[in-house]
Length: 485
Image (cartoon, rainbow, N blue to C red):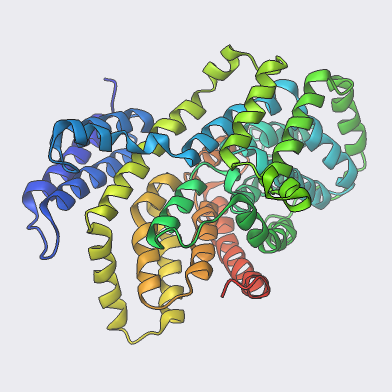
């Protein structure tokens, strides 16, 4: 069958139960309740992987259009169902994912990683830091965290481990492979939180924050990057050392790593024409995203972030670095364009129809009844939001289901809007530390067999605490300096 029967039946039953079986709460409009039924059904289908997320999204578009839950006429309902595909943020991520394909095709991503490892990797701990640094360098230009951690960094991680005799199938994982695999993975959530363009769901956070604040707060690429820089670097500096304590490798000295990386770089050869172009394109995009030309020469040189992405894509097409066939084959980009647009559309209309405000009010009433101020309320909301990810296999599904409501409650209880936005935005990536199914990168690395399930969950639990405490601790100081609260 083209779908998982059990998961599909559960999703349909959940939808029908909410639509017909649960009495509509007082204060909720019928259309809002019916859209909630479709929304929750879609999220359940995504969690259960009844179909690929893009296929589920197509069905969701169809149901929103046919049921007319957002509009009075079929024509307007169809327009509403397709409304979010004009969002510049959706296209920013999709185009950036396509451009990042050039990192793999040209070998530039591997070259950057091998150079970093050769410089820092005299000890196993140094190799761990090298992997984390390479992740950080690649993060701003790889909106697919799975591609970054699983397709670029992981093959290098495994190659290094095997070169030192650490393999998943002969009982030698603890020599080095377990440690490097854990660092490889735990780098991924941290770097994903540092840049809007480091993981696909981040623009969804930007959209939800903007809608909740009436667009008074807009997290631009530069604002996000500057705000998250110091907390992110603090976590990157701590993480390899903490994992070294939790999963200390048997091999601690790696004097041969320079020869290994030198050999790999020799196999790559001299910096090719296409690599030079990719390096120039990514450097130019980062400068434009950071608004450097406008800061130096005036606002006339300011360029929209999505326009920058299209400019970069145009350059790699015109220079032949990527062909149109390469672009068509980048399935993850087109997949992201579809599901991202649909989830934003449904979240937008849940808000317009008043459901998010009603749900936020229920949570607010419960927390007020506990007698907490906004600080205590924000702490509880953040912890519940982050650790609820044990029940999700998709960060997108988690953010779509919970971010808007939890952020709305925090604002209603008096939390500073920018401060709380940054904390929840970081938590939306840091929650990926927890499980072996938390994001697409996890099964790639866990599936190799270097790390046991118990060790993965133990390290994930510890790192979730370390990352959250470090991020908020450093962030509170840094964000105060920036005047965000």
